Image (tube, rainbow, N blue to C red):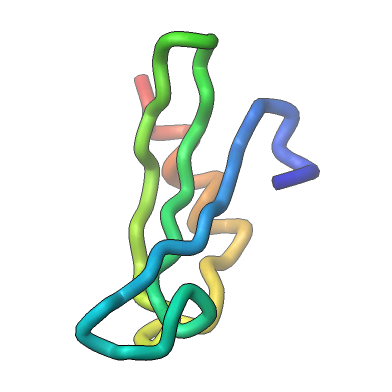
Length: 65
């Protein structure tokens, strides 16, 4: 995810109970701290929330430490 200055990624995950595949499934946002450490930040359902706001991501990043 560009614009944050750190390796931040958003991936699509299938929600098998919704039967919509990846596009209607879950989104996971994570930070790759180094080649061995991944920090999970947020998981949300695409059907509940179309997208996560940049301000929410910044809030999560500020509260890491």
